[in-house]
Image 1 (cartoon, one colour):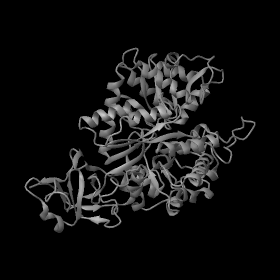
Image 2: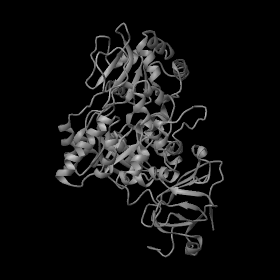
Image 3: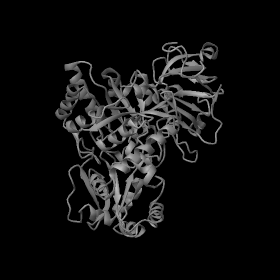
Image 4: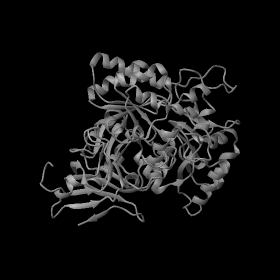
Length: 562
């Protein structure tokens, strides 16, 4: 024991997976001042309780370190969960329109209908037929509508929303974006990439109290994250308002989540202030729990809209004269300059690079700067969907993290949309997680919430890492099954690996003396249940810095004794 003679809190009788290579399993933990002071067996620690020690009987429950979500959008996710229309990504056009109609029925006439998630097929239907946006207008009763797609890079809006954005059929595409058009040249309401920012800005102007909405969204995001055992996150694209809300929660003692932020360096959807100005603004809010330690660099788009940058061409759709490879948003010299600037700022970078061409561009830039300046900031490549085999060993060699999103890759609506655009060979080789792990790379999992799924549920993602299948047995098929990993590796991807990737490797992601007392108590032992049942896992309790942050109502939960 270190510190005081008696711990503040003593956890006994557990089956604790510590993720500490020096002691992988334990029965008991002691914590004081929010930090773990001892890890051992009941016989070792049971006698250390003092008169004021809180003793928690884990009752044989399985315990893991507090999970770390390496890629999340807190404000968007919390906003969707608390305020917005929920739409299943499996819903077809009729299902989306029915959901909009039901939601809009009791809204004021000037209120916006905002929500998601809609799949790519719905957006394609809107582009193909001018009557589809008219059906959206009718369903919403003429109200402005803003629906986000599964990638969160694209939007579908109504005619009233287009008018609020100041757009009509004569409008040109904004820089970095595209306005969808029907065959007759009219606007379909589909907005790709930076065109989506116009819709978000128009909606933001209509919010009567933006600060209150943002605070409520962050409260909800923290609650949802804690309910899944998540105690640390890396927000993937951060702006000042959410950081101010997080600091308010922290100052009021209500922030039960450690947040590493990522400041966009160029205009990006809801980010109006970017680059060094944004970095300086976020650094002004730095605190114990809010860490503005990364920038966000977007190199390409998403495969569903053929904006992912690839080394080999997309499938031919017989309406393009030349092969399509996607487009890199950065010149290579610009990218090298940005990497070097991270060294100057002493700040890491999360690179959105969804294609093998964009992945290579990042690795080339990092290699150039590392060769000149040596080891330096942490760099992550988000959504390592497609990696050329020659580039796989470069992640470990260059100290670049593979930021994976297991919610995206299993068979379902997202992969169906992707399969229609890229070659069978590329799809079959996608998400090379096992190869990356075996090469020595750090593979960090993140939910990308609210993309794809309505929650940041780690257990669905964890199961998928192991099975490479949809958790719904009715959905057939596997995706590159040779890249499956075991349960321990998958758990590592949700605990110590994303902690290390985000610069939290000395305080989160493991249960060992000196680390934060962050832990999740589960209703099942993930190493003993059939792997197909992992997605059903329930978090009975989440503890953050030695304090209870979440407790599942109605379940048999660990009890305080004595």
